[in-house]
Image 1 (tube, rainbow, N blue to C red):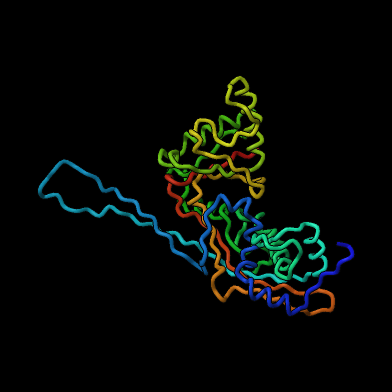
Image 2: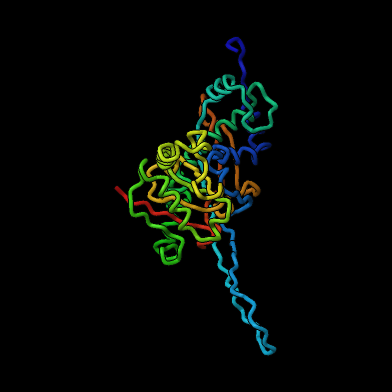
Length: 322
């Protein structure tokens, strides 16, 4: 490899950016797949998508000939908002080519390349632009005049805070559980079992995730090992499911929840993230404005939301601070 020189013209980069625009715009999301694989993506969302969920109290009663129809159906709407953001990144092509030569990987998943192409170099740049997105998927808070990814949209934690303030998530409504004890490796299993048992019966029946920080998963494994050492099915250290959930609740520790004050118990279908990738508004442009570097400019939509905050689909767990 050291004896070979690989280079591409500015025109080749420009053509690759145009031809592979959609795939390149998805690269920041590929950077987040360790987290987003537990969520539900909603493509084609530009600005807002209104989501409706219906609840009815209709029921049979003893026969009566004069019984009249009663409208007990309540349709509640939530809005998945995506926000338009952009980035402008200078990059030195040879540095990325060297990286790709070492990795020998096809970043767009088409498996066709052993050596870099202009497309793969741009994919590598686009992927690096998405590196910060995963860190703020929960904690991001929209600021119109912001300058970072954390300012682009409202993450799930921020949305939950807003709903708690508005009274839509509360102990009274059954979708908020406030812990009385600080979690450690002496009580983590009991806490997880309590979270499961305090959930609404409908939620308990669903396949769902307990989104938590890595510290909780570590504490749960430590505590589980101590309390279940004599049980024959305890054949591995990492326990994927909450004890007593009938394998319905999977513990999902996320690096982006490190230091959080809330956990979330909910199915994959309730954790939505929206993006566009289909319209001409989103763009990727590559050009040269200085002798040694190219500029990669991209614009895209992104946002998160809960499909519903109904207790049958969501339980927010408020941790007790030390």
